[in-house]
Length: 240
Image 1 (cartoon, rainbow, N blue to C red):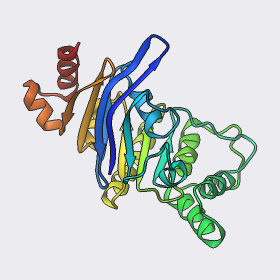
Image 2: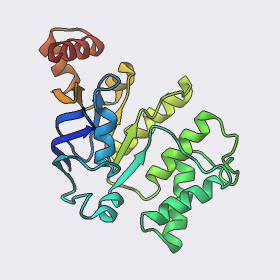
Image 3: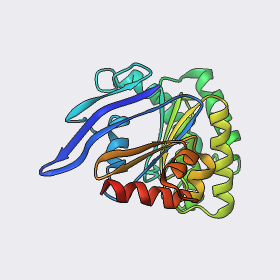
């Protein structure tokens, strides 16, 4: 299980997050929702070890990512808010490099790379350098880097942003397969249709604090609304 408890983080005089506590279990998809500036990205960056909180704790399968970062990161696959590909190396080389960073080597690394290429249907681009890739192709490579080491958890920051309808549908199918195979997934999104299709639970953040958590239907019932978008707005406005 991923557990965050009482996270706080400030940048100079700005309190980015004030009290963030939530959990993600294996075999479920949790959506982290909030408006721009709500604290979503700061929370994700702490969870993935890019930022250290001023207060609070993070545990990934019981591992503190700030005391034992290498072991913690083996448990995580991270899809960042920007793909950040290296333009002069191939898809296959990207996957091999990131698999190696997570401790894979030899035949195990080769098998993992080939499996990832197959799962994401990247056979035709596997030996091309990524310079000039379309947005959809770049997203595939970034997702492949996140999953090549078969992590227990995937952390995805707006993974469907900029994808066409077909690519979004394929991404949803893939994430649901990962969930059913036991992977825990935390993702952020502004697309409520996507959230409603994918999520087992929601964690809603507003003004740097968690204002609501629960299953989509339970939050709609709590707010006496018919749509998830209306429930989200009601909960955020209540907090503000």
